[in-house]
Length: 300
Ligand SMILES: [Zn+2]
Image (cartoon, rainbow, N blue to C red):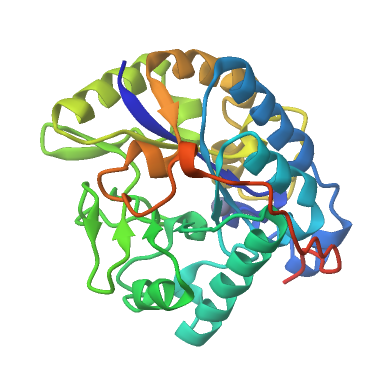
């Protein structure tokens, strides 16, 4: 069966950029967190289906919920970084970004007791506005990034960016989210809101097409996308509400069916040809859990 990469961006429903103008960062500690329960549901599903995945986890979520980080590692998944608290890369200067990704990496490694080699930017926000980002990732010790979504989109993306993995000038490997070409246009087939909006067949067929092109599918989802009971943010713009809430109730069953379409696994195994220096599952040792500091909170 086909091998493909399953990735989860571990964040809460109120961290998303779609709500950034209606939920202030200062309000985050007062929001009712649902990320731990939702991530555990995904971990349960993956356990039941024999799926492995890469969990790009926010540093601030790891601090507040160290148990899910430890379960991610103990269940044999890859622990990776989604930065500290979901600032877009292009909204930071290089020093702030270096501090953010270094703090996230150290925190995840301390709690998970395993090396963190992968990074995904909040809202795929490495683009022409942050050309220094890969240099900073290399300096912080990251080996790869999956921060490019090479499509046209009003909030993120670069329709001219490579659709295939490649090594950046800094040495960091960039592995874009999967896209499909139909006619002369690129279409998103890599997950998220698009997955909730379009039929499952659209994705399974597009993934087969990607494979025929020599591209390993790279798929992403968030824990809040399988949570139809999450609180509704009433004051958000209509477009943001549509994107965030469409298809939530069917997402988990759709994901369960998607899992049957391929052998879904961790980034470092699906892309072993690119990430050959990372540990394989048969070489991992997750017994060394250290530094479980619960002191910091998810605040801006
Ligand atoms: Zn995110």
